Length: 197
Image 1 (tube, helix red, strand yellow):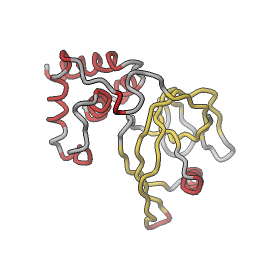
Image 2 (cartoon, rainbow, N blue to C red):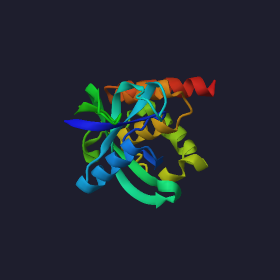
Image 3 (spheres, rainbow, N blue to C red):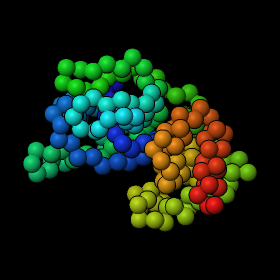
């Protein structure tokens, strides 16, 4: 399936909520179309370039997102909040006449994707990661997630930790690209050990 892309200097994970202020015409047009057709778009990390102006270079994995709130702001700006739903692989990207990026998207098929009810509990050896997440959730920057994380769900723990850990965007992108829950848990444990030292 083909989707419009919204390149950012931020990595989103399933369950991430992000407020955005939109002023570029290509994105205003995209959002009006999304709201009219009740569809989403894909956010993707910029590998080189800027969010504004000419088309940046991007990574090949992003998140399909949906608009959950919007408001008109002064000066012709549009304020929206988006919710990341699931990870996608990108291929065959192209640039529309107005500079909007488009790409074919394929949803991930991994042990982290799928209905929450079918997710296994976190393996015993990684239980300390839940304590790290509980500490992070006490900070003001994580206030939107307080009381919403399912600590019986490995995917929820992985995605919130990956989003909230103070690591670089490149490192977050590697977490986003993890194929299995075990791979993501291993990477998270390595980052947490490095931060604690």
